[in-house]
Amino acid sequence: MIPRPPSGRLDDLDRDQLLATVRRLLAEADALSSRIAAVNEISIAINRDLDLDEILRVVAKQAKWLLDFDHLSVCLRADTGLWTVKGLFGPALVGDERDRLGTAVLRALEKQQPQVVRQPDPAAASDRYLADYPSQLIFPLMADRVVLGTINFASKAPGLYTNDDARIAYMVALQLASALRNAATLRELQQTRDALADRAAELETLNQELDAYGHTIAHDLKSPLSSILLRSEMLPMIAPEFVNDRTRVVINGISESARRMATMIEQLLALAKVRNVSENAVSVDLRGAAFNALMRFTHLTEQEAVVVEVVQPMPRVMGHAQFVEEVLANLIGNAIKYMGKDRPTRTVTVRARTLDDGFVRCEVQDTGIGIAPEDRARLFQMFSRLHTVTADGLGLGLSIVLRIVKRLGGQVGVESEPGVGSTFWFTLPAAPDSPTAPVPALGEAAAGLPPLESVTVNLSPAVALPVVIPENTPA
Amino acid sequence: MTEKRTAVVIDDDRLLSEAFAMALMLAGFEVTTINDPREAMAHIRATAPTLITLDMEMPRINGAALLREIRADADLRASKVIVISASSQSISDGAFDEADMVLMKPVTVGQVMDMARRLAG
Image (tube, rainbow over all chains, first blue to last red; front, side):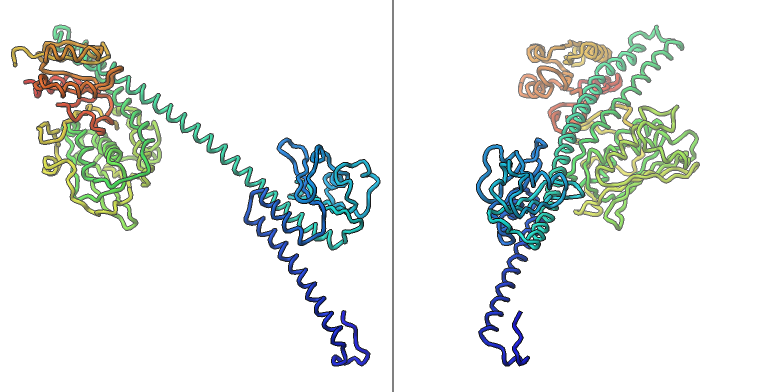
């Protein structure tokens, strides 16, 4: 404080005295701002860095601005679970000093209370760690009421530390404890993440093996199945004298069973393949996909006397041609198969339009018997089938549709009125290139096919490569 | 041509190749079956058959390799090759582009007859 002049007037103050006071105040302010800056540095490091060594390095460096000490260390639990001292400043710890804690450190850990040592402690006479330091500030590092360790300031000057110093040590301990907790949390998170990544990789491998396994089995079943099918079909041709009303039932049963099994195999293969729908979607001609899908049902449309119309033009979508075709084939196939007997009109209409939200909505509408509201919910579930009598396959068709469309970022749904018909729809992202591209996908031959009452697979050389698909395609 | 039409069935599945052979016989072919694809080329070269059916998925020599070899042989230019596959994936991969026709398993008698009529009629 500035001494008060006897006159009580400011003008009478001694100029030199005043200057000295100002200088002292400035120095104090300076020291204080250094301390504040040091604390600030520590908190920046702690907030910025989650690496334990880096945090300890900053604490060691900045602590010099906060407190006098000849030794600075932290006591932390090692990976082994034992308390271990890590020197941050001062003569390096030797030998088992690192593992043997001094009396004050043990007390701080045990009582979870700061230990301020101002003079040599008789109880610590046999200590090796910090034995040469009569002044010590040992502060526990507490986080969530758990002691993580201690921070240890020590000086060779006896009686050095004041209560203010203890307060500063407390602040540093608080900051360090919170940094340690963050670092530990991060480490745990990383470990959890690594463990999850390992597990995910394991599952992925397992899934791939399972897919490959399923694929191989389904694939290998096709050869013996072909053999059964061919033989049962040939039997009446080779030995017509063998065929009568009773044997015909048996032979047809064999063929029918084999065909159903073929459908199931196709469905299982298709389901396994859906996993390969990759992220890199490309622009797909929906119209081309619809025509290709329709070609699979040439036989069936004739047999069921169903007219399939593809309303043009159709927009392009983002996806994969093969999978978009699979979706359409499933929906068109179902519409034909489940049309029901004695329907006055037997029409399946495929149409698509671009919506305002950047998606294309594609609909497959039929004039079938419709689906009761209570049945609609489980339509898309795996292995659920509404028409147990007439249906082929495993009832995987719509769940394949759902899986594919979801993977491609779209949605599926159904609207239906019993007795009038059903409309199955799906959405896919619209392709940015052309909203309604009239690009022919099947070459001129297919492009020339008007309303598709029956599309026949053209085997002339003009069409790229004729492919005959099994009659029973996945439902 | 119509008098003596010959076919070679190459398929590692003995029972299936037998069934194919029967179907082709019904369609009027004289048929040989080969279950070991390594023996296929020698036989094909020796007989230059009208029709070759080729299973795509075989051990040791894969169908696509055999197909390339057949197509590379000028003496076999008249032979029609029908590829039989269990996987539609190979079609999109373009593995069968050189084939005259592709049939997907399971194959029906109707398809075999139709195919025979179209390609070697």
